[in-house]
Image (cartoon, rainbow, N blue to C red):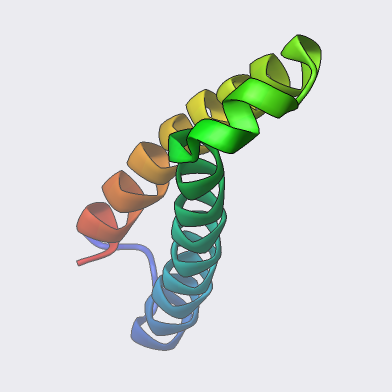
Length: 73
C-alpha cells in the first residue's frame, strides 16, 4: 500500500528534481574548472584538491537524488 498522497508525491518529485538540477549545474561548473589546464596549473594545490572533493561529494549527491526520483516515480 502506498502511503504517500499524490499531491505530496508531486511536490516531493518537484523538490528533488529542482535540487538535482542545481547539483548538476554545480557539477558542470566544477568539472569545467577542473578540466581547464590553467586552473590546475595556477591554483594552489589545496584549492584544486578541494574542488575534486566537492566534485566527489556532488557526484554522490547526484546519484542519491536520481535514485529518489526513480523511487518517487
